[in-house]
Image (tube, rainbow over all chains, first blue to last red; front, top):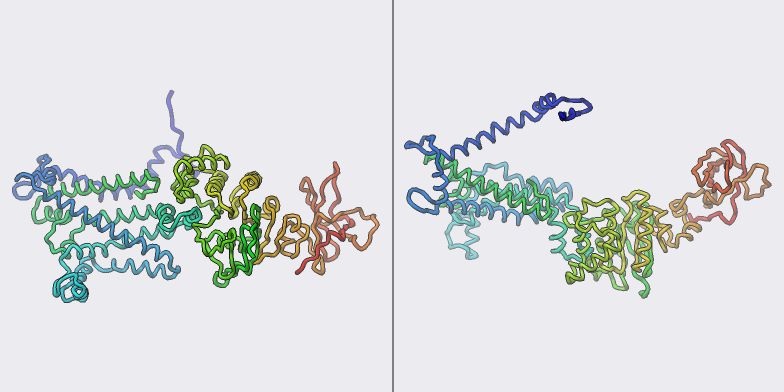
Length: 307
Length: 328
């Protein structure tokens, strides 16, 4: 027997499959086109590129190879060298560290803002966003000035014995984290605040009513409600922070290579596009894998993960 | 002056939020094992009073004692009271089992005891088989039972219920009213029950405090409140009431309609039938004598065709012992 699917009914009209497809093309078509042209095609190009080889003069040769990936894992032409694995670890650590710092600051800040009278909430949120209006480079250079040896902060640090007198506070790992923290804080505060704002406080009352102390109430009644915001914030901070290299360069003394400048270097000075692509693909794959595992864990614990 | 039989003592408690007076010098005592209702329209202060008892709010002035102990000395999470919230407030990320076990886990009871008591609570509230579900997978009535189980498992001295049946449909509400009442008799826990549904309060309560504008208008058992309301508010909030001149009133069902040829005295009124509403067991009439309109409710006791027609002149008998005298 021949099976025919019943025609789709749309706003009271009967549409054949063909009509349905044409309409869908008009509504979703532009969006799909945009994603294909500006996201999928470039991604595919980078993926293909990562398996090609660099020619004598930095051109791309159509010779399929795994060499770029082997090289990244440390097995280059000159034997084992952990340079690139270390770069990767360093970048992941920077991303994770930045995410952790911003979470620790965003939680109390979000609760504080959510508790303000309605009028002041918007003022506070605007204050959180204002640094965005300044270019990242300018903000980072500003930190150099603030942290300079004759700056008040350096003198204060010297006075309480943190550094020697006349010593600058940068370049240092502390300065890097300070810059990263300030740059990414808004990305964490906004989604976390959105969750905190929506909290159903009766659940906190219910928990207290059933004998939970303040810490237990937070853990069992409030935290599960803000997990979606935390997940969103961690994704928004961790991914770009892992690829960040301007701030480590400027505040860390340009001595440490991060994933971001490793990629930039290969596409720029080294003229090795295939290897640059391989680094990009690996970094992207690793971050996505991490997020996938994270989302699975969150889903398993019953908290809705935003992914 | 603490009464040993008192579960809750509230003395001269006031609470204001900005310009709004939520509670205005409220004093009441709830006896142990009593089913006590706070009845009033929304915004009358009954929920504020409940939240003060639970420790989620504090009075501006006045004293609250729970089991003879000053409530100020017991933080919310240590009070021997539990609350059933109007919105149920079940933890959405926990299973029914974990929701019910929550209170005992917070008290660090041994796992065996917790499992045993959860099973008993599931049994008492008739929700066995639902323990692995999430609150989102439950019907309104089931959520209500879970909320109840989650509270009574802690064996509180006093159970506070904030319009617990408010979100349910009429039939389920009636059924749960009976079940709640049986549960209260069985567990011998003091219930303080907040509702705006006068019938619910009348059916369930040992005593009722009728509240209005943050004050207690009258506190009595159901029959006394209905038969002897002291104020106009109480008379009109519980059932319906015909207001007469000089602060007097009469309930519609106390009036008798008689044929026009009946001999009359000063308790009889010659009236004209303006409207007849047949509602099955009763017929409701709107009758008028001059400026005075009266609502009359007559039980349809005799078989066949009932009563009078629109436009008919009849005699209304207002028995003198049924006339209420109101204070305001």
